Image 1 (cartoon, rainbow, N blue to C red):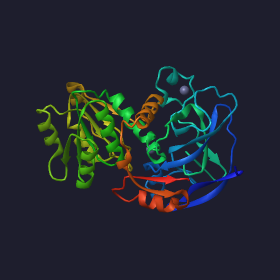
Image 2: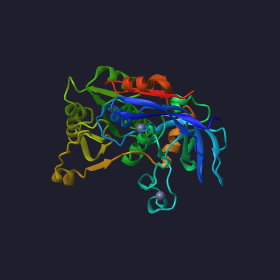
Image 3: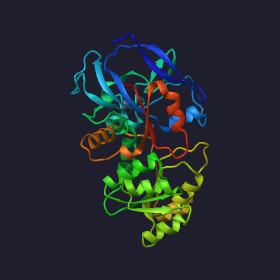
Image 4: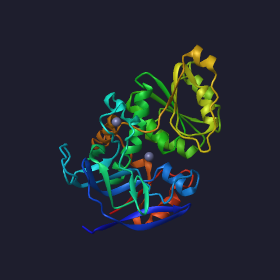
Length: 346
Ligand SMILES: [Zn+2]
Ligand SMILES: [Zn+2]
């Protein structure tokens, strides 16, 4: 093994550089992972395009799959050197949130952020990464590009779990980008009927392909009316906004049934407030639920579903690039309408 490894760093808006980083030794509770594939998520896209300001140089990439090379001293878990894993949710294990099963809120959630002289970040655009061993989840012999989607799938499973989705429920997903589609998959797994509202015909077709029960072309019909019609005038039990858009949020709030839940799944850049009527919320017993990422439980289930072939995530992968072409990968990832772009490191 060489004493340095290659890492891709976003140095400025629209600019990346491959740098040599000294190979670190895993400390107590950590493991060294040889990265096989990393998918490009919106955080990296927005940093690269300049849509979101971020500390630079940024070593992005948090949707990671790889192989365990070594453990730090004292590891007593069930993973072994050579195991293939998805890199995900870790936590301290001994705070209020960890003890009460809400490790997403733990201050050390998703530890393993790298801080090199050459940049900081989740560190997935690289050949190697140190990560807390409790945040590694076995993926068996699943292809690395698919295994890298464990992280975004876990976020959708987290949303479905917290929203209380279940059989017999009507769920609306607003937006059929990658995260919208993953939410379709997660909600279907929970047994709900899934309705997708979106303005792009190609994306709607993809949503149908991936398992949506009903699609609404919001460029052609009023989605609020359409949802009401589909639910005998009640509205949906759960509406999940997978796009951070003012219009989508406003529409979504008007689609929920009494006792229904509106899930704010997407961040908005720039941020526009959502208008809420306290009286409607009070009278209808509505809930608003924010979802950022996932917990160990969700991450474990995501990898389990992927490992057992219970979900097909291949249709979400648009293209693959080697790490040496990270710039081209990011250029394609920020094009509108693109599904996941995966960077492969071997
Ligand atoms: Zn992500
Ligand atoms: Zn904790």
